[in-house]
Amino acid sequence: AKESNAALVGDKRYIIGGNNGNWLNTIDSLDLLTGKWKIEAKMSTTWNDPAVVSHGGIIYIYEKGKIFTFDIGKNEVKSYRVDLDVQGPDLHVWNGYLFIIGGYNEHLYTKKPIAGCFKIDLNQFDKTEILERFTF
Image (cartoon, rainbow, N blue to C red; front, side, top):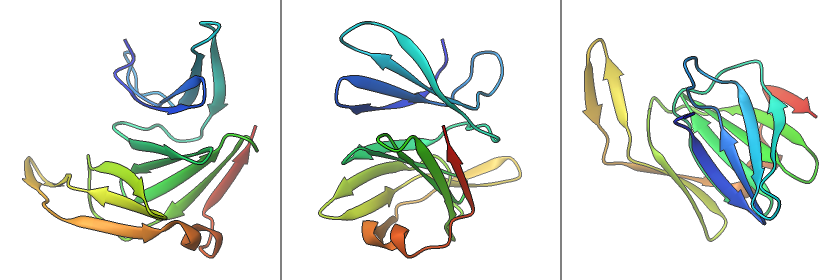
């Protein structure tokens, strides 16, 4: 019912944000072995339609010019600003890079599709200023 995006890490499915009558600010998990749900984190912001991908125990989340990293092992979320005016893209990780693919720009009541692909070296997150950091 949440209309959300999710990532699979190990035996857990992590559900990011979504809508269940209201926009949600949680990261929930479903343990696929036990069938148990858990609220992993409550954020200060809501995610309307985040793009989500996991790689190496980290979930990458993109929405509205921000990238969030959720380190599962450390229970830590960091946010970074990126200079992209893209909504609704897909995320992929390949060969050490995070790819932000497609999406659209919205202006007033029109949506213009984007055919572009943006590439970010995963090592850059260690060198980039963190906007916010949350530990749980």
